[in-house]
Image 1 (cartoon, helix red, strand yellow):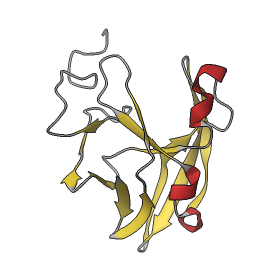
Image 2: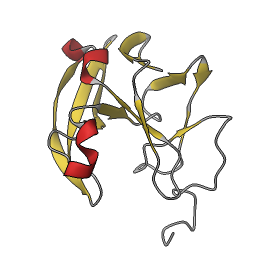
Image 3: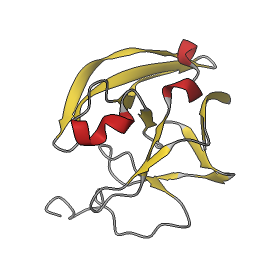
Image 4: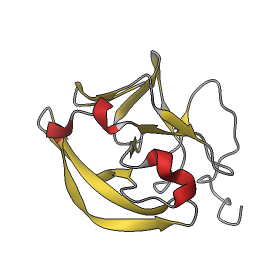
Length: 133
């Protein structure tokens, strides 16, 4: 898989971890060694996932473009998700994301980071009327 911003590869990996959550398209977490860290700087804010813990956010600047707070990682995840420590996930609505050579489509809704490909089927959270799922 790979992630680009303004034509610049900011992450590429064959070791990404695919995470599935209820009513979500898969989210991919990239090992820190497979990201180009010179494009990353800490972003303001955090969020809490009851399953994974507290997320930290990243600002990515590459190719003359800056995207703030649309990549995240778990520096100290809950023990059950320790394998995700410092792995980075990206919102595909803000980046050009690819699995093999297929361009990923973003899961509906601004909050969700799911990667929709031809191999996955919904419905997914984020569509109108899905708040109570």
